[in-house]
Image 1: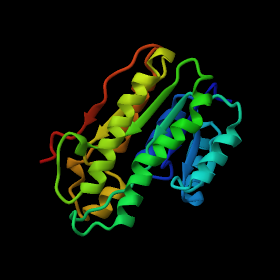
Image 2: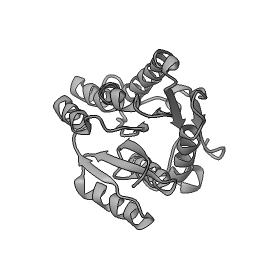
Image 3: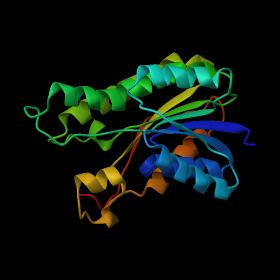
Image 4: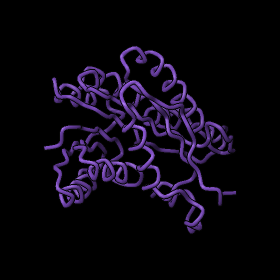
Length: 233
């Protein structure tokens, strides 16, 4: 049984899957969260091949009751790492973005990390070296058109990260946001069909950076940072 435990959202594919596998390779037991139980179980099978057991919890991260139930189910279990990786985006002008679409983007990219971090804080406090890692986006530093809702949500996540890091500093719980540039994920494929994959950051590279941050000694942290390909124009 793994001595350390990590909760990873959006773990059924893309960056979340890569992060779960990277942590499992390091002997950290993952708890996989996402909407699709089938996808999560496939990732759990990959982790089983590494020699670890992964817990699977299929839920809607925008459902407050589901998040509360998940937190209650963990009870007094120790959680060492929370990776808020699940995300969604919308390519549309401001004028064409409806209120329901705006709410959806904010709910998954900002509200869910806030509520889940709050729900799991008692569990993280039981760890000897706890981390909250929020997966942001390059849009927080490099503005782009047609993604106003997504950008606003990720900038909000950046603010949440900084404020929570300051709040938890005395407890030596690190809170860091890693903001990838365009990455080779299903979300990117859907947004940019036929894109040249050589200009994209690989999910495994992002996962390596997550592992590097959570492996820092207790009481040591780093500033939020971007991670992007130099081939991207």
